[in-house]
Length: 167
Image (cartoon, rainbow, N blue to C red; front, side):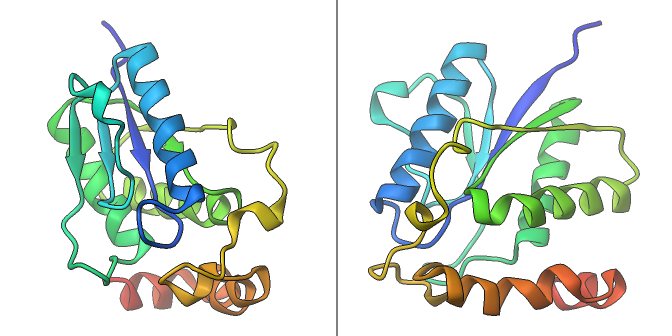
């Protein structure tokens, strides 16, 4: 039996035309085209238009109000279950990747599934400063310092509190 795979791709900041989100969209698109993987992603990951054959599902979110990462991951796991996907490739900005992996693991555990996570490493060579832009519409992604202020509590609070806050 074939082990079906899919991609979960997260934006980092907004809007979708920032250099960071364009890079994440390119990595996502290339991975999907190379392996014929379906994609679960956010609106700010603009899958390249020449890739109309790529099966893409977008998260439900209000404009300017992205859902918490754990909520996105819960949706991704439900999406994977519905498609009998057993391996999820995660495309995320390097500063976001550790929490994204943790949240995907939490969602898999909550939904009692057996899904393998593969973190995509194509974005790893970029320096930490590359990921932040003063033009981002989301303040945590404007600078590394703002990201640390925002992300540190989310990564270090007790899991039970974190899952409650992000529900």
